[in-house]
Length: 256
Image (cartoon, rainbow, N blue to C red; front, side, top):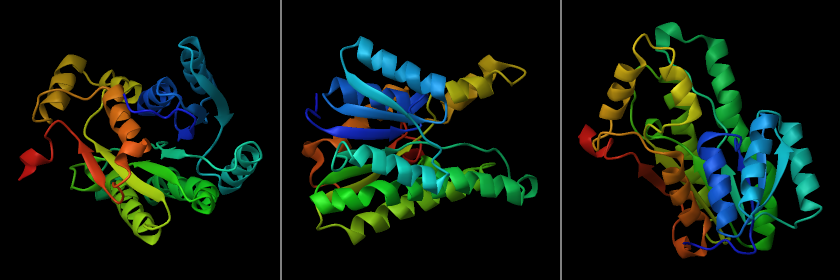
């Protein structure tokens, strides 16, 4: 296993799904993890799971769309830790719709969390990383951040923005010791996806159809995404920056 011993990490949206799995995997690898989420009960459960396994974690409430809240949290954390070693911008929301069924308010809400949220958190924490001369920033994009995706107009717009943000931030600070990468998962069997499946008239049929979009015939599990995040967080990925790593069961390979 890649080691994060002695490192400090912040994972946003860590109250469930990919964020929770990432926080748990980081703690297992030896990191002290700040578990950030607007979902207090979910975030506290993630911390409890980590601590029960012998790891170290602390819950912090954070609405990534609130710039002042991000700045305040950074000040609180930096009072105890000069800088983070790892920042995972995982918090995000989804939306189903085409141009005709997406309102301006829908798009604004998506951008506030998925795009401005990543900007806000990065703006609050990356300067200290640059000052210390090391760090790893990992943003959660999507296959929808590199390809087109039917009926996901607003979502894909935000995820393309995250991929572009990642590459630009990486290039701007390529010689600083701070690396910036993003993960581009395909469909992942998270609590959010399971909740959406339950809304279909035939959830089992919908599940099979979602699995069939991956070339290997199944959805990913959150810990499979977390494993890739662990690699990018570790020193073993020291030569990796500006990348958009597809973890999609062959989805994008099969599109061409």
